[in-house]
Length: 311
Image (cartoon, rainbow, N blue to C red; front, side):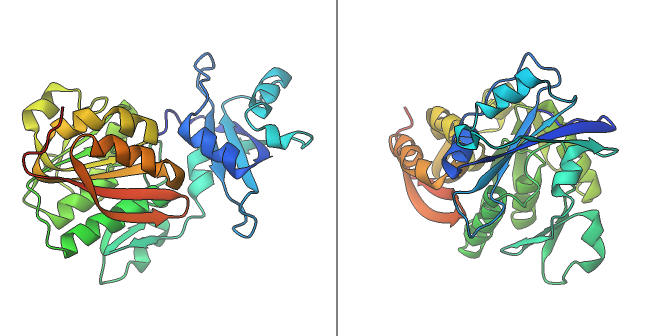
């Protein structure tokens, strides 16, 4: 998964409203379209207090101070905020992603340790470490879906699985492709994303983490619809950390892109969405082999049996 845009101006604005968990889940599944606003607002939801599981928060980042009409339009996204005052504040002299993620502590998921430059001098000795800064693309490792994917990759390796041809679809920052390369260093790996910014960020992160430029093929593509992916496949491992809707829509294409006795990791879906996603992949001859529920999110590992139908 990757963000559509993150402002690079020296100043931006943030609008904050309370919302319910159900409203936050709905926004995660189907983000509103602000295509007439350039650059488009970026929407984030969070759970400020785990002891109040239904009290969530909506933060909308904008390049300019919102007028009354835009405030009302954003308020309409979260009916649960009726009567609450919208908090509008200026975010000056910094990229909003850096501000929103700058507090993040390092994350340990399986053998992996993901950190920013602020924690580069405190990396444990017994980990595979990656430095991933707050950036313009989704997938720093701190979101439950990305951390869960790291844990799932670690589990597969510890279970003795070996993969020679790997695709990370919706690569974001490149982190999951980096992790796969560390586990299966002889594998051919391709990382793709529909967002060109994500591919630029991935290339930058490869350099930061001393990964050779030719170690991972980088492609801008929606799903698996690209000639280079067609030439490289079929794959024996696909990692797809995107959203439930696209995962369901891509089930047939992913099935056709997998070899027999292969694995696919699906993430970016809420726990409540897992049954629909699993049904779509069962129809393509895939069976659930492992599952991690991380917070409100599910990470699923399925296998495609030898000779299973994909059409």
